[in-house]
Length: 430
Image (cartoon, rainbow, N blue to C red):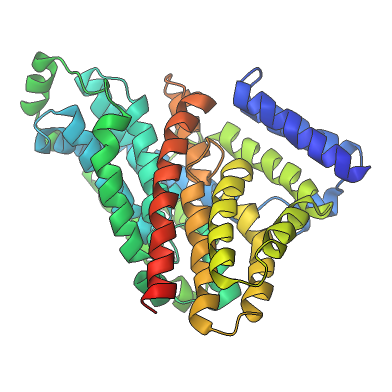
């Protein structure tokens, strides 16, 4: 009975989210309320369980970074970066997109992709406002790039942190095994941008000329506050990168950074809380509870187990199946809870494979499938949801299907490239 309720509620809520018949936050919270009210999950499951509850690390990481970005916005640094990028690209929308995409991908590898899009999205909105062009294609391109670039390192994408912990893989392991394929994927992604977003690069020559005449230095409004923000962000990013040394969770780092910046900046609550995407945070809470109901009732575990059983003990089949299944399921249910559920299955499967190179390939297959699969739909990765929330607040909403049409194409391309990479590197050349 509980299993049927969990599946029905998730499917109905997902349909509402996909069709946008009601706001996605209302659909997620409504679904969460139903599974709680009907006893499918209890308060212990929803609020305290590591396996079935809300991932508070994700929620508070977002909250902390949103507060930091809100204070940083007052310095004018986003306007500065917007003008700088537009001038370097000589006012060409395509060149601006490529530049912002590359910045996003590289930054996502060394920060986490959610933090990166929180920093890049305001810049993008300002550039597009200056050029009087639609920001939606640029925002979609950046979030797709963030999910690709974030796959390169241990800290770039939350699923990688889970995989690294379960499999005992280090930061350097991810650099050696994931970065090469990410560089290839990023090059291909950049090449397909003109085709993927064709028709989005027309600009008024007068607008472009006007941007070239702007002085970016005049955009900085508060130098002292900018210095304070820079120091706090440097400390936050150092703690992110040094996670294996400091052993402080990114969510704690973000909250500490936000707290320190609020104190030293003298900001008023209405100044920094206004930048918090409350709807996005509540959407995540509802989504985590609904997915937690699927985890508790064994639905996700059953699906993952069936995928593992279907390999028949063949390592290459297992790698390819995990890659494809991970891409599809991560795009549907968010890659964080999916990887958290799938990791024990992969750990068990890897233990049954004698060749250590082949067994490790299972983990890289899971990472690639989950990270790239996050681009499949608008709810496939945390960064996707955050960007949609920012776009909504900016008055340029991105629909579920508008994102998914582009994301599905990029997911298909990236997985098609990842498959031969895994085969060649771990089975042919190994």
